[in-house]
Length: 103
Image (cartoon, rainbow, N blue to C red; front, side):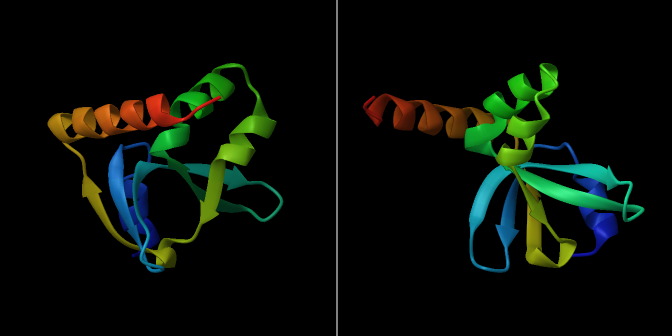
């Protein structure tokens, strides 16, 4: 995938298919690397979105960095927009998975 295609899906909840065979919902964010004078892309998985959002609102850069995985455009094979109904189904699955986790 080209960087331009990746830019079009930045901050848009989508289903991502990666070259390694992984298929996962989430978002791509971009950050400007001042030292290297370039834009870098990071993937935040669906399961980490709420924690990432809370950390971002608290300016907790350490947690944000831990939850976002650096990716390169070439690693992404396909991006599919996720409709609201699909999003609700994913949320229901995620919620049921959380209920099955014992603390």
